[in-house]
Image (tube, rainbow, N blue to C red):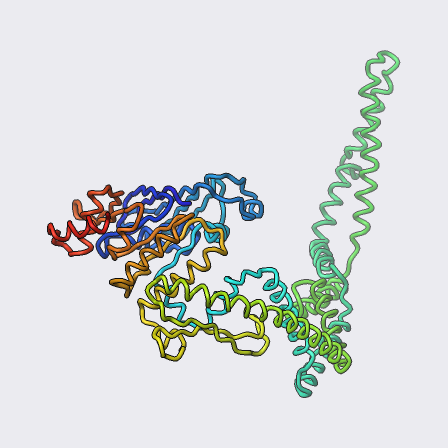
Length: 548
């Protein structure tokens, strides 16, 4: 569960430390006090999108950290190589330049990795989630989450990917005859052009190197000849080799007088041999420099052709040869299209048959789960002051697609004797909030998330229904942590821990403060929620009765 939230420089919150406890926690305060900012801060440490606009005016960064206690052993830790610890520290910094730095127990992670972890720690439900119930495209996903047959869903997803792959291959082969003729003509031209060029791997690099050598042949020849002259000498001067031989002869003439000169003499002899070898190597190189203008022209023409082909087929000879191989394979597909189409049709049909078989198994799982979902949601709604409600899952058959063969929409009738209709046609805002709360409570048994957040799910709810929603939230909090942002005193009175969010102004700046209320503070806050800004003895008495 979430035990501590630290916020710096997010909107009107300059700095705040908020402690949360087990069970049912509520956050109340005037509209605009900053309750939604706290939810946004929690979303940020869960890896959800955070814009730089949330940074408080005058600050260069925003910072949020959260401590979680009793974290279960999740596969996430092994997958991202983060050491598991029962107590978890998550930190996130958001900079004005758009950068984000995220850490889990001091280890850097990406925002995406943090999002995967966050969704296993906290479930946030707001008014937007209730509105999503109007979107019938979401209904099948909610049922699948309730059915919780992840293995079968994964099998179907893989089967559907095979269907798409086979269909794409079939489409490539099944082009119309005129398009096939145009493509065949183009491929034949390209193959002929590349084969005529007779390219070799690495040929362009070798030719460019040879061209550089030939274009600088005179400079190379002159430099090598000067080096040879320095070694061998000429008519006007002695070379290094001749001078070295002279030194060697002088030492050889006096060796008999002092054996200590044998070492220098031997090294001079080795140098003499080395200079002789070096001279031979330089002369061989000089003799190999023979070239002609004709060769330079031939290399230039060849490189021009290669560069022309590069503009169409690849950045080097190896890539162009790969293109040639691919063009030949595609041409074969077109020439032998009839046979290949039959093979592709057979593969596609087999993939469709496999996907349909799995989709039918999935349908049975969904229908079984739908009956149980209907029963349990109706029980939950009865406890939420909607005892006459009918809630149904209506299936329809659709073409094989990403979600199988099933279409689904939720239908309801809120009043006895009324026909069931789509939610968008019959559900009021308050009813929609209660339906989503009922579904959340039903779904809660299927996940391991330790903390649930309800952000103003009481919209449109009042009176007896509000009391029922409050009791349901308190029940949901049994065995897990619930945080609820509310404007209803009935909900706030049933909380086990009550946090007050207040906005203040100091020296021309706005600040938000968070206070954990004691009993006296709770009575005053409940009185404000009941009667508004003017707190009277009557509202205080009503608040005390509610709290008692």
